[in-house]
Amino acid sequence: MAENIDFPEELHKLWAELYQRLEERIEQHACQEYLDGAKLLKLPTDRIPTVDELNAEITPRTGWTVERTTVRYSDATDWYNKFDQKIFLITDYMRSWEEIDWTPEPDMWHDIYGHLPFMTMQPYAELEEMYAPAFLGAQTDEQRENVKRLAWFSTEFGLVRENGKRKLFGAGLISGGNELENVMEDK
Image (cartoon, rainbow, N blue to C red; front, side, top):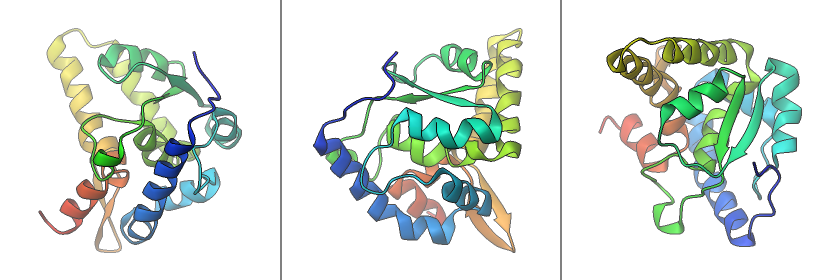
């Protein structure tokens, strides 16, 4: 298990560019819980944070820890087994410059920028804690798919209404420039 990694400078530049591209749109369109969590998490704007930095802000607040993985998301069982231990996995994979506004699979930008601000908030952590027992205790493939679908349409691509306005809740929307724009522009 790789934890604190010395990433190439090119990936830090990509991180900084993603941050710069999304910062203003996130301030305008993300739900308040995300914005509050982002202030607590204090992500660096110019480089990829270390696991130690992330855990220093998350673990004392919610009891969750972050671990890096070289495994790209494929089999939900591996991920839900970690969730059951209050471990949030972040991938080592980072999208390319060609995929800067949209990547077909979760990457470390999505995992860190999209999900982890929420993981500083106890109510959100409690929501995540409900998925693992439901998925791991499912008796059929259909039940497991239902749990995955619930997570997909809430914590990945969910929207909430705040003060009469549609706001981003899902990490997939928050971390992706194209997804964010498509949703907020009713595309």
